[in-house]
Image (cartoon, rainbow, N blue to C red; front, top):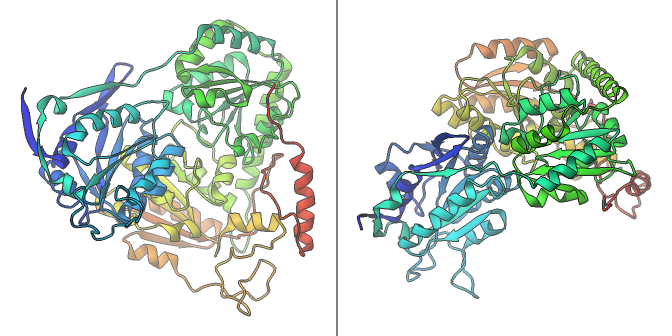
Length: 625
């Protein structure tokens, strides 16, 4: 047997650069390279291996969490057919990646994590940054990755990667099981040499299968569709990942079944499709939510039915409602006591369409959906045209970017009140124009995620919308975008606090306590009703400049529009800094979110909020019939 003698770390890089995925007969490398930050736990292992293999591109990050976000965003943009590896040192470098791992796993996005680990040979323990346990020597902080990884392994011998790496690839390339994969690498083992079989490093092609649903289930699904009077489609991220967008648009046109979109599924059909109802659920449109309320059949395609999509199990209110779920993951396809079509969205929808023949909804249902869609588009324009003074509203700033930015520009966001407003208001013209991390809704994802999106498609403008709260949590990869020449246009909205939770706090009767960036008054943080609040003297625009960005400072609608135009001619990363009014919100549209209110309180506003919550709570359902 031919062998190659190399270190365990060198073997990993040799292996990764020869892994390919194949879908629909098209092959491509699975790994685009490796993000990393070096420390004593990986510099002599994976670090040396990357230096020895410059054809496997290394990207220098500034924050371990951020580089996992960038990798996940890249994978999402590539429909999970390509991703990055991420390497860190041991201890804090490793645990900084745990949040990123959760983001990848919750959103079902493939990312390979290679954290350094403590010495396998133990004799020099405790090493720098080691967490000791008096109950076991076989534990490290990398055990924190177990619950947020779809596959986890610790490589205590150099030969163990011969079996571990193929298993990691099996999970990473699985449409149903993908997520974060963690291989914990003891720093001594990384540098140990072994005679590896040469075949381990041969090019390998992993098929990304289009699994097909059971025929009997498809026949029954077609029967349910034909029996329905008011069906609706809930389009999730699985539509994008399978490439079923054009098919879904044709299916909706032919059958007249309207489409509501989750955060992950927004852009499944163009916003101006006659039966596109836009966002559905808590952050949804009145068009989608009214149709959903009366629907007797819900066809979920590639959705996991989060509480935002179902309005905490209150949205689908028809007593006779039934569910058909198309999903590659059996776990999701069985939700809501549904008729499960376990399979790829594209081929499953094709099979369902064939069985329906020329069937279509009634003219009345078709007209009702189209009329609501038109009315919603008028509501979007109304919000776009607001000229709030003295500071602009968040909704109108979204409108400026959508109307005057590049027509195929990609919007990236993640947390706060912006995702809800964007879900309602962003007019997605194509399948990849709306990139939202809302599975985990991670503050700090935005800029790093924008970097990953831009790396995946450098030809398109990438707009990152971020509030001051998220910006302060994780802005450091502005530097990486400048270093690598990946231009981002960042719209930084400063409302001096946490706008989203401030609004939620007020709705719960708590007056926005602890959500403003302001000096304490009489040693107490001020609420929203406090007079003469002194905000903090923080200059985020100057901070962005110090990180290498070109900054445009704005205070009015017109200034934002002018800055957006100027940014398009700017060759490097730009920040459009604008103060917005934290109290001007985009309305909610006929959906409710279950956030429990204190059962007892000395605050009258909290007691009133509790009473309202109890009334809504009675509308929640189990969908067991």
